[in-house]
Length: 422
Image 1 (spheres, rainbow, N blue to C red):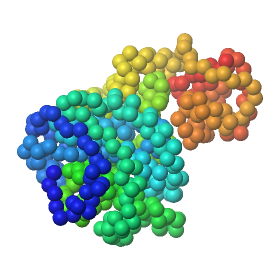
Image 2 (spheres, one colour):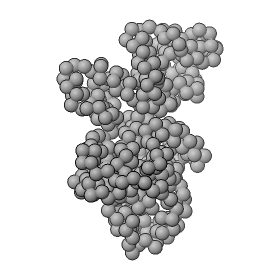
Image 3 (cartoon, rainbow, N blue to C red):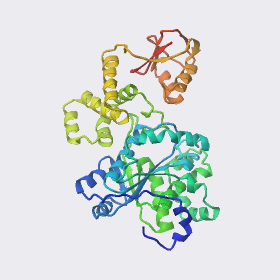
C-alpha cells in the first residue's frame, strides 16, 4: 500500500485493521470484470473506465461495504451488495465486510426525522443475526481469498478530539448541508441535530482507516460514499472509487428497506418471502432479475415481451428463496403459493400460535411481531389498515377492532400466511 506524508498521523488507526491476505491471483477476464462493473450498477465515481483499467491490469483492489446493524435481520436490498462483494472476492480482490456498530448508534440521517440512537447492547444483538445470513451469499471462510469482517466501533470509539477536528476541517459545511436529507428538512423547517451531520464524516473515515481503493453500496448512499472519497483525498492523498448499486423500489418508488417498512426480510418464512415477491408489480421484474440473479437478461426481456410475467415472477421468487434457504424450501414455498393464492385453498400445514381470549387488533398485532410472524410494528399496523389480516375469513378493518380468538381459529396474514390458534 502506497504511503504518504500523512501516514504517521493516522498510523494508530491503520494498526487497528488486520486483514486476511488473498492466496490467489487476480482474475483479469474482461467479460467478468465488465459484468461486475455494469450489471445492476447505477453509477461509478469518478468513472467506470478508469476502474476497469486498473482491474484489467491485474492490480489487487481493497474494497468494502459497510452495514449498520440497526435491526435484527437483513433484507433483500442487502442481498444485492453481498452478491457483488462475492463477485469481487471471486476475482481475487481483497474484500472487507464492515459492521458499522458505532455509526449504527447514531443512525444514517433521514429526510423526515432524527433517528432514535441505539444502545451498544442493541447494536451488538442485531449484529449476531447478520453473519449467518451473509454466509449464504459470501464465502466468508474461503481459504484462497477469505473475507475480513471488521467493526468500526474499534476505531471510531477511539478518535481523539484533535484528530476529529482535522477530519471535520477536510469537508465544508456547504457540502454537508447539500445532502438531500438535510436540504429537505431545512426547507420544511425541521430540526437537524448536529450529531447527524457527523454521520457522513464517520462513514467516510472508515474508508480512510481501512485505506480502501473502492467502496460499494446502494445509490441512496452516494452522498456518504462521496464524502468518504473527499476524506481519502484530503487525509491520506488516496483515490477512492465509489460504486453505487441500483436500488430495489416498490410500486410507489420507495426503496425496499427497513426504514420504509416494506422489506423482504431474511427472517421471513420461505412461504412469506416467496409470496411477497409474487406480489411485486410487473415493472419490477426486469430490475430484480438484473440485481438479484445471474440469469440472462435478454431472455428475461424476451419473456416479458411475450407476456410471461407470472412465469418470470415464479422463477425470481424461487431463486431468491433458494438463495436464503435451499432448493427444497423454495419448492415448498412455491407449492404453498399455488395452493393458497392461486387455488384459494387452506394449507394442510399451518404455523401455530397459543392464544385464547378477547383482545383488540393493535394488541394482537404486537403479539404477531413479538412471536416473529410479522417483521415490525409498522408492517403489522399497515397490514391491518389495508385489510391484510383476516380472522376466520373476516377482515380486520381497524386497529381498535375487538377480536375473539378461539382454539382452531385461523388467522390469515396477507395473501399467503396462515396461523392456527391453539
